[in-house]
Image 1: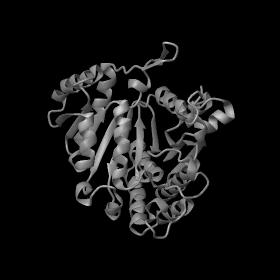
Image 2: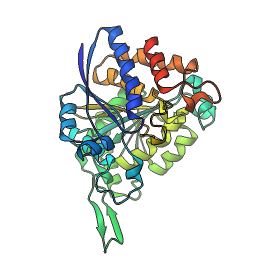
Image 3: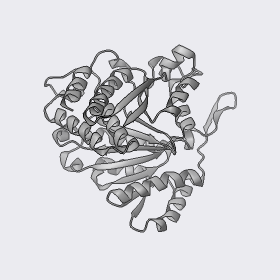
Image 4: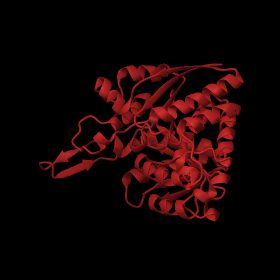
Length: 352
């Protein structure tokens, strides 16, 4: 098979980890007889520096024409530390999600047997954890009207959802639950927020279409607590944009490192795959960034976008073997030998 993949390396460690995912993907393609054409394009601070826009039209055209998008990370300290900046790298990420229609962010959290002792939580609390968040990605407070009034003394951010936006995300949640343990949790704040009450009543109305799925409804603060207490009690969780942003970052460290968790952002016609970590500017160019989340995002790409489970499994097996044998970067070395970003990528590609 032939694949045309948009390659958005982005900022900070993005280019370094993306390079390793390309190595591994090319190794898988060679093993299984596929042909990948990579189409690099600019986004984030790198795009602002080049053309003054964090998600230029030329990049969008590359993404629209691609079979899938593999994305690194965006962000730069000079924008983080300047609250008055009119153009920011993160604006490119929001624009990309909106223009590509990427309304569902799929964020798995799972543990690795060889790394249970690396988690900040006790082993007996996390063993067997295998959950998936579906975060709504193109609505809510991030996209609502925002601004200042009263001569800048008052700020506002509006959170707005339509029933249709909730339905399309919930539909993916129900469908995913049917392929797993048939458990679905709707996370909201319906005791306070009107948008959450819309979420809850919309999901309740959909239950009759999926009678085999056991649905629970929990407040976001309770879920934040239970993710620390008993994360393995959850399976599929659906939630709105802001809640999902916070909860998925909380869940990501259960495995022992943010450098291990992949993600996918899905729309009707487009799919983007990216690690959950940020641009980590302090590590840029030091060859110390963990590339495994990006590599596992490539595995999700083969499995989800291309419906090639064996190719994804080959990548996951290589990652599991590397972790078991200690072929890891400094965030997981725990005083032992630490390998560089490039060396880990080389090892994974060679073992595929």
